[in-house]
Every structure is written in C-alpha cells, then in structure tokens.
Length: 220
Image (tube, rainbow, N blue to C red):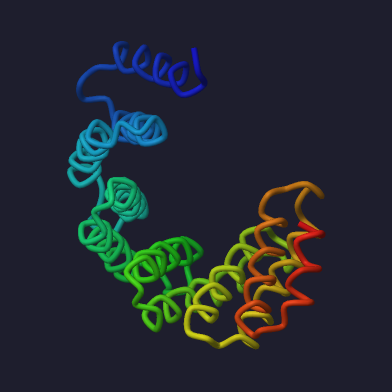
C-alpha cells in the first residue's frame, strides 16, 4: 500500500468515528482532498475540498485564513486538471479573502501570488507572470531566511520569465541568486540544483555564448 493510500485509509477511519457535526470535519475533509489530489483523483479531491469549504463558511468568518487556503487548494486541483481559468478564479478568490483581514505581506500571500504567476506563465502572459512572481518574491524576502529553499525557487521563477522576455542579464542574475541559495540549502545531488544549472546554460545558448553553455551541464 502506497503512502497516499495509507494516509487515506487512516483519514477515512477517523471520518467514520466522528459525529456529523464535529468541528474538526472541515480539516479532515481538507486532508482527504490533499490525498486525492496527490493520487491524481482530481474530481474526488474537489468534492472533499468543497465539503471542507461548506463547513468552514458556516463556522468561520468569511475572511478566515483556512477559507482562503482552501480556495488556493481548489485552484491547485483545477491547475492539475489543466483548467487554468478556474484555477485563476480560485487563486484570486484566495487573495481577495486574505486582503480583507490580513496584511498584504502575509506569508500565505506569497504562495497565492506565486500560483497566479504560474498560470500566467503557462498562458505565456509573461509580463503578468513577472508581476506576480516579483510580488511573491518580495513577500518571501520579508519572512524567510536568506538561504531558504523557497527563496531559491522564487528567484528561479523570476529568472524563467525574464528569459522568456529575452531579458537575459536579469535572467542570469536571478538564476545565479537561486543557485547560490540552492547550493547552500539543498543536498549536493538535489535535482533543483541541476535544473538551475540547465536554466543558466539555456540563457547562454540564447546569447550565442555556446562555450559557456557547454561547460555548465557538467556541473548539473
């Protein structure tokens, strides 16, 4: 039995033991939604998240943090299904709810903005993607240690969009910042480090500096 199946087994056992009005059901439905998403059972995941949302809306104020998080999770499932329109709608809903009760620099906002950036990047709307990736990066920098892996990922995302826009020097700057963090915070053979070397190499290819591009994959 895989780890996701095992998790689902225990969550369902827990579910069978709870009364129908138990306040912890909302959280349990969220866990079941996450497991279903990880298993690729997207429609089932959406059903669990919707059940969670129905309980949270009844038992919490509309701007409660968990409601925003659930909308973000629903957005992730829609994105995994390839439905970018609904994903973006859910992410924007999460942002809107958070702004009602929390500072715009709340750490969760970094994740929401990053997810919106992913959608725009996938749609090749690079200026919009850059705007949200940079918002995400600015928030992470306020909350995370300078060598945190999430910062490395955020710099990498900004670099990707700059490369797509042919902003090669800016792309290299962000990739190198990402690489510095990843070399410090991740195991030496971590695939994210290899990916960053490859991304840097691609920029040098774009710049027709093939000698540099050929050297970099040896480090990957």
